[in-house]
Image 1 (tube, one colour):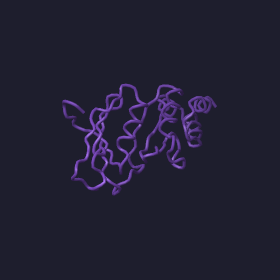
Image 2 (cartoon, one colour; image 1 turned 90 degrees about the vertical axis):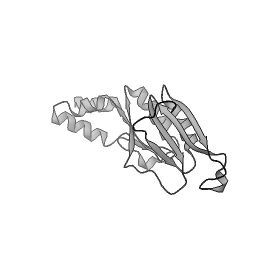
Image 3 (cartoon, rainbow, N blue to C red; image 1 turned 45 degrees about the horizontal axis):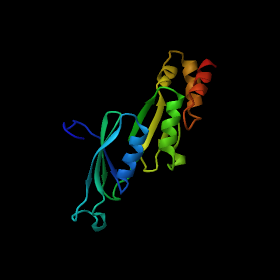
Image 4 (cartoon, rainbow, N blue to C red; image 1 turned 120 degrees about the vertical axis):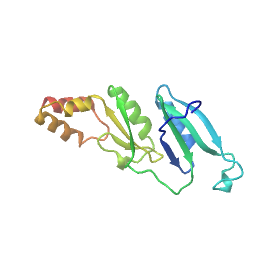
Length: 164
């Protein structure tokens, strides 16, 4: 995060995987990069952390983040998630496959997933809102029923449900 300080920057607390997570995330999103890594010195929460990443400042498609290796005190929950808006099925598949690998398979429902670091993501096609809010409650109901059966969202299946 070089230069200007942002008003709001999500800060993600990891036990010790901040740098690994930032590398994965920046490999999946276009226009993404790791901007700075700050390392622990002799003084830290854990005497064995000297030289390890303390903070990793990175951006994903223009959105700035900070990842902190702060120790095991706090865990991620599904109460906070990041929504990834996808234009087509190829993009849904790209993000789903990259973020779900090694994650919690039991936490996958309706386009939600938990990655291997415990961070929750929603991989959502932009078309979903139009299918659910199209003005026809019967069509929207069929789409919702189909969606509730899915882990990764299948756009063609949602369209078939919409058409009846």
